[in-house]
Length: 286
Ligand code: C2E
Ligand code: CA
Ligand code: CA
Ligand code: CA
Image (cartoon, rainbow, N blue to C red; front, side, top):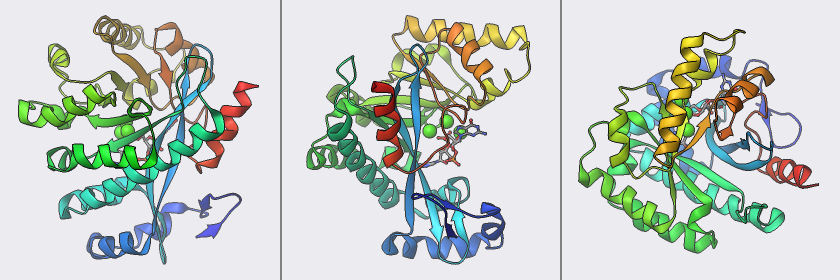
């Protein structure tokens, strides 16, 4: 990997080298990679659709393999889940992201609504069932000195399908402490809309599939109706709606009109190094 400007690692074709290693090769290299500190996190801004201000960022993990360059999480997260490494890896991501969010808070202070920049961290289903989830999270927040309200944990819809009370209990505890829980990739599973009331979530993240459906202009009126319906249902349940994969200004305008609250996507910014977030947040404060 080349060190191309700032803290961003780039290859001519970032995935070309990575494709060369086998699943087995990746799996055996994973535990060592964690010990050697080969993982790093990029942050992608979350932007308020109403006023365009940066409200926080999603933490997205990457693996800088010494021979193969940057490997995408879509390739190694499933392997880490399979081998159980996701528990220590996920804990590392949480700790690192929370520490990072605390430094944003120190630089940018609170926004007009009195909220610091938030950080969203993805949780795997295996982390949900791990008994240390609540105590680790509390400890990590306390050690960094970050308010629980500045953390949002993203859980996929599929991880919570048919979830019983035992699975929901730790999430409820976290929600009671003030941690936000987001339902990620919403709309890709078998969304049982009635089920939403039972879940301790405060944010719905509409999957990129919805935004992609709006790439063509004019967008399919049925797609628009579906999004409109989801947004109104979410709002009636006091859930905020975040949309992913916003790539054009036209999509952003349409999603704003449909009542979505927050957006994330290449139109605003690609995932990038943590320092870029204060620059973006400070730029919009001035
Ligand atoms: P996700 O949680 O749905 O994350 C959003 C993905 O969409 C990210 O891919 C992001 O880079 C990409 N994206 C953002 N904006 C756009 C856009 O405008 N257009 C397009 N085409 N893509 C966009 P990424 O970083 O490759 O991550 C892929 C998946 O890996 C994530 O999907 C998440 O499921 C998983 N993942 C990433 N980091 C972690 C982690 O720390 N823990 C766990 N458990 N999973 C993670
Ligand atoms: Ca996510
Ligand atoms: Ca997602
Ligand atoms: Ca996804």
